[in-house]
Amino acid sequence: MLVFLLMAGAEAPPGSAQSAMVEQVRALSLEATQKDGVVEVILRGQAPRPVDLRYSVELTGKSTSRHAGATRIDSSVSIVLSRMRMSVNGEWCARAHVKQGDGLEYTIQKGKCG
Image (cartoon, rainbow, N blue to C red; front, side, top):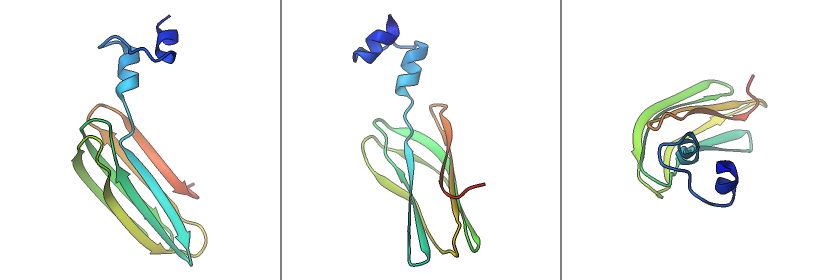
């Protein structure tokens, strides 16, 4: 019954497992564009409510670039946390690993990652 109510737009009771699932939102996204032999990767943050997080980004192509940090994203504010550019000869891989303060942990990949 609870699942039906959630699908119909009702809120889950506070503290329930369904409530925790609804509240966890990925605060970061990874964008990648390739043009004229150059790939550009942007790690962007935006969340419906403030969230603390740690992240690491790796871009591999002709060489490897890494960036890591920790920050707090305020609600509904879009922010660029990392921007990388690299010359590539074909295949490349961009990975972002994120650990949010609400316990959500995830990896985002773009390109050809093995």
